[in-house]
Length: 418
Image (cartoon, rainbow, N blue to C red):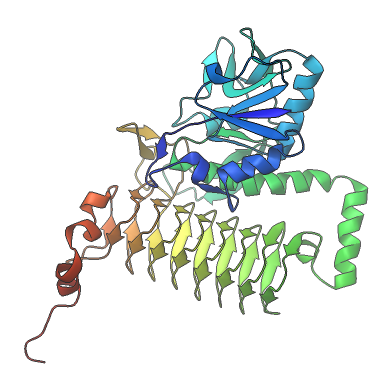
């Protein structure tokens, strides 16, 4: 089958790159798509619109290149579309909780048509056709809790949950969607599928006997924790699965890793805590850094005592020591993010911040929920102010305003008495 990739050239703030080039589960989105579609498609064509697809009668799968979809979703869609034998497109029911709750905010490509929701993925058994039927796919969402807010909190008290799909589909049009793709629709979904498989006695016994053989706790056995080549793990580290650790990594003393994806050539040093997070290739975490449901793209660094909760950080960026990304709005109102020049609700009761590519964030900064720092920015405390309450554009950052010798002079003023 041929796959036709419809280019989406919209740039995602604050990265200023199209979605296809941004990382999801430690892969550029275009590569993640290619790997998922490898069992079905053997060649590809890149176009700008559906009208450019040749009328040659070839079996075709067409999709926009800003879509995130996982292997279980594609297996369901392709098998049902081939069984139907007619031109169709992805659709969802109006009560699909994963789509309605997490995929619809801050986007326009998944839209309502009649009594269903349709997305930009098409199947043509004999080349493009004018009549395309909706094919409703059930994401098989399950509710998973991740926070409990004390009763004395006046807003969003009680259990906070994600609607986690066992078959994930998402249109990435905002940085919040990168968080959704990596955490609720990525790592959480993998854990939900594992939990579903544990109901099968054969799977449960296989993991149980593996843990007995290795003398490890059930969740720490090699059946659930996959480790690459030349990786060194301190015996005092605690790692619980499902976790994937790449090649040439170093995991230090006292590290705690729970349900994470760790790329190649990553150093996680003493006392770091990582939970439900993605740490891409070449990243470095010195001692006592903490990540919770956060994503680091390649070659980034989070310095000691920094705390990232439900955040996304671009490539080649640095987060200074003691910096904290807050994720809960203490004010009794929804969290909003900038979308198409307006502030729109993100659809989540808690969310962290986002840092673009090639940024430098100084020590001791505090970033409010849903705030962004644009690529190539340098931000540090000045005049005793270390709180970021608004989005930081490159033009507003210290990198733009203080260049060269002037920047050096302001950072390190000369003392004529020396």
